[in-house]
Picture 1: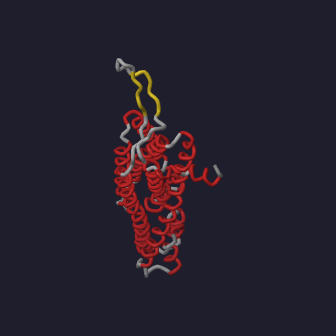
Picture 2 (picture 1 turned 120 degrees about the vertical axis):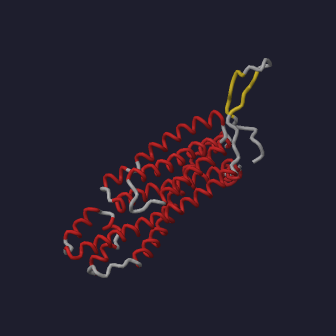
Picture 3 (picture 1 turned 135 degrees about the horizontal axis):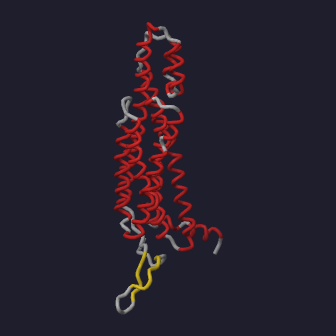
Length: 286
């Protein structure tokens, strides 16, 4: 066998619906998760007004929920299967979480943001072990390593492409929002500062600028600052609303998943199960 033929043979698992759909699901779930990692701290710091330390720690509850749901789902799918149903439920939960995150505004509390984030993280955690296990069980024994690494590759691609798309959405939404801000009573220099996301996401910087504004214009400044935070909140809203669309696509993909067999029982003539082994061959037509 030539090297070229061997290389083609090593990649033939892309023809298996149990495997390539698992790759697609890994891509979409990671893209959804990355939106929260990128923009929820941004929201907490820029809109709610928390410190950088607090905004950085806001992701921790999501990760804990993700790990817990991943552990539970991994055990569940290994015992009863039902990968398709569990994945559909995972994307449904992700969609609900993303939709709740998209409703956040300037009056959203820190506790509400954490709750919405945990819901989304729980759905992402459900999808992770299923994509790995289903793809591995569908792969020939000699290709398990390649399939596992390809699942991770699609996760990385999902986060990379997702972050790029979110950046475009965020930039366009911010540009449109800031262009419509009305604050003629304030000096042009302060207007430009309030249109800078690096400024409005730093409460200390905003407080310093406010302390230099004349008392006659403080009410105008506070109103303009609230408008700027609203623009930021609306831009993040657009990102999470896009994630709802991704979750819907992931849900549809889950419905097309072929569930790879996980175990089979070898029975004695009396009907007593004596051994359970993983099925790595004799798979249905792919």
